[in-house]
Amino acid sequence: MLEKIKRKSLLYKSGVEYADFCINHVEGCSHGCTFPCYAMNMAKRFGRIKTYYDWIKPKLVDNAIEILDEEIPKYKDEIKFVHLCFMTDPFMCGYKEVEYLTLKIIARLNKDDIKCTVLTKGIYPKVLKNTEKFGANNEYGITLVSLDENFKKKWEPYSAKYEERINSLKYLHEQGLKTWVSIEPYPTPNIVEQDLLEILNKISFVDTIIFGKLNYNTKSNIYVNGNGDFYENCAKQVIDFCKKNNIDYHIKFGTMREHIPKKTILFEGASKIPVMVE
Figure 1 (cartoon, rainbow, N blue to C red):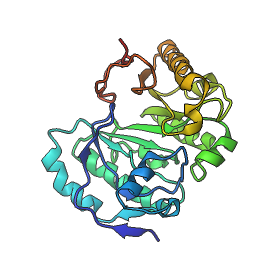
Figure 2 (cartoon, rainbow, N blue to C red; figure 1 turned 135 degrees about the vertical axis):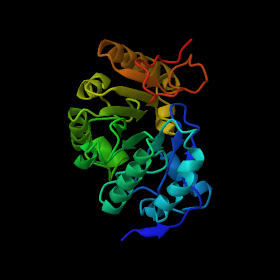
Figure 3 (tube, helix red, strand yellow; figure 1 turned 90 degrees about the horizontal axis):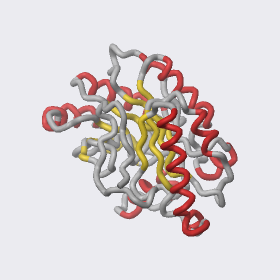
């Protein structure tokens, strides 16, 4: 049984370059990623947890729906879409309580015609194909930075297997729903030797791809020439692949050298999102 906590607020305006409003209805994440995890580091910094083991024991926000009932009327005219989640995982493996609450939240937002973008390292429940209950305009994504299960065991130890993630996303795609993939944080070759094109080909069915570098990692930072050339070449490979396959894309700021530092709203329905370069 998950420990439950109360919050005073839930919806917040994101500072992430391609997002709008966000929600984090769980504290912690059972997937235990070690890249390191930015969300875990922030939780430590602000005293919400003390150790890695505290972090991988998630706590459910028990009053999430009640807060949304109060906040949706307040923010509805400002919201373009709501993202689930940047500081936790909405479909974390092994926790049905998290899945049930996530589905309730998506349905509650969709009830007021608020679109959701969702990102997970878990498995999507097939019930999301029910567009009478869940909005047909939602966009469902997975994080996928490798196909190497040995890499996953070390860096994303308790997340869903890569093949299972891809299959659950492809199922939603086949139901006519919009899908996307975040290839971030993408590791350098001194962490894992792999072929980026192999990953791209595996997810060529999606509508959107986001690509970003691995930050806050000492090993990545000491790769050849500080990894700048590597990520520049990877980003160009992603751009070429997406243009060839008519896929929307976004290269995270800091991944390429010439990005213009401004915010891009990625999920508003534009036919093609240009990469932000001079």
